[in-house]
Length: 434
Ligand code: URA
Ligand code: CA
Image (cartoon, rainbow, N blue to C red; front, side, top):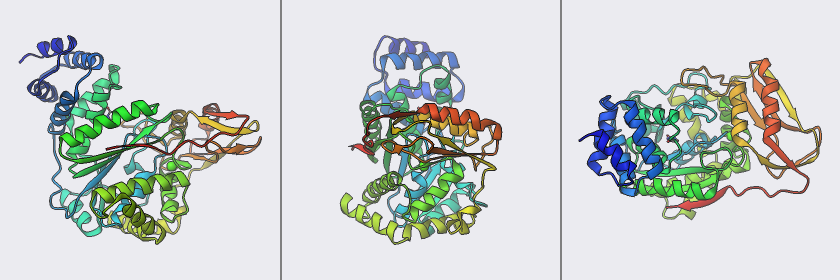
């Protein structure tokens, strides 16, 4: 087999066979195919697209390019949740203990944040002592004992995707549905769960800016899941504004704790309940979504989910006192209010720019090796539809770098658009694909 022929075939719009796709993925991962040929093939795929079968084979090939976790020693049906990425998306911190408290095993492999979207591991590490360096055996034991554990993404998880994603990033071939869907699903499938709930974000802070393209991506991923015999459901949700109020690592941990105390922002609470209900249902801990929802709400209101969070933090070396006293989280040296200059209603928010402002304040990483300031970030004081009076605080900034306050404040002011008349709040849950 020659890569040249594979590139030519795709360039001319023909479908590739399973063997051709596996050959390309395996040889590229081993370093036997140079980047320029891989880049040419990616560009051909970008223009000519892949059909469902090709997309499924590409996913499989990338999934099997490295370690595939064996979770069979964990009792019960393992359900994973994945968000396609957003700004201030605090849900994993709420959903994981919530479903674990419903007896669903949560064996979660998470990543760190890159760019303006946050990673669950960075967030959890803002709790003093918390660590994710568990051996596979410890990981499995913790899930069996506490129903919940989180580890860092292993270096050898879907290495083909790692290499191809980096190449796509610099060759303008990221935003192709088959390539995005196979990239996300190869990692999810390698992480070993039996069923998957996908939170596909739609809006100004997400990959997919509108509902139609979000649904297309969701369908691709759900089809891949089914092809691999995993129950998969996608929920399309609003990323037209940051989720909840907090953006930034320790700020989001505090927000998650408030939510687990049933005192959190409405949108974060509702999304967490919805995602958790589908997970509990797929894990067969409830006979219907409605009954799963009742169970989840009970566990939130009774404090069971909060106790589970505490137990989980302690099991991974963290200080559980943080649950009672969130002042134990890292605190930024400087804060500043972003003040409204006129009256009106919040009409829209350019959410990716809010993420960039958080990054400038220190909450994110510019590249893989950049340091991160766990205390930095933003708390939104206004959301879409809210009334604003001149002089109101729209957002509060947190940082240890006083010199970036001005720039971050100005980005936020430009990202928020006011209207003179009342504005409807966006729908949080937009569609379900299963
Ligand atoms: N996230 C991924 O992991 N891969 C993509 O291609 C896009 C988003
Ligand atoms: Ca948030």
